[in-house]
Length: 198
Image (cartoon, rainbow, N blue to C red):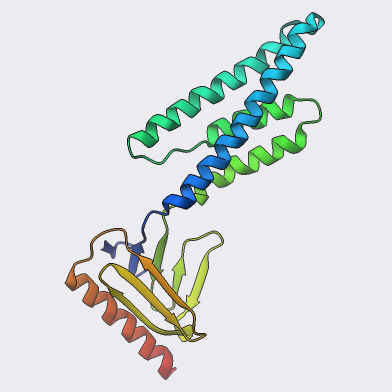
């Protein structure tokens, strides 16, 4: 659906949920968590067999339990149709790797993954104002109206035709009414005309 709530942008269009991308991010997070959990459990078993290590081996069993608990919670969130974030479990794994001998590199890697997971799963939006078109991707992509030949929203498909012969087509998440479509198309036509006259 088209909205006009922001002071900065005249129109914000929410694009279709990128299911394949989000599934790929989830699979990478799950793989990282499985590797960490197995490594911690194996280390805990080794420390337990060398009984001189005292109770330090228990942390190597506790972290995988917490990771799997969070993983189950994320699975339940997904089954209810919500986005699941594995960042808490990734942070736990980063802490576990930090405690692991020579595991600082993996701790940093898991911490980076935990920090980047939520921004990577932001629903894609395209914002339009009188100066530019902005995609909220990582990294953010901005297109000046001077670079644009045409912008059309029709049948829930946003089409941006650039002067460098690049064509961007995206499906819109919500159903757009004919009035919203007409208002948006008129706004874009006015911006393109103004940029051509400048």
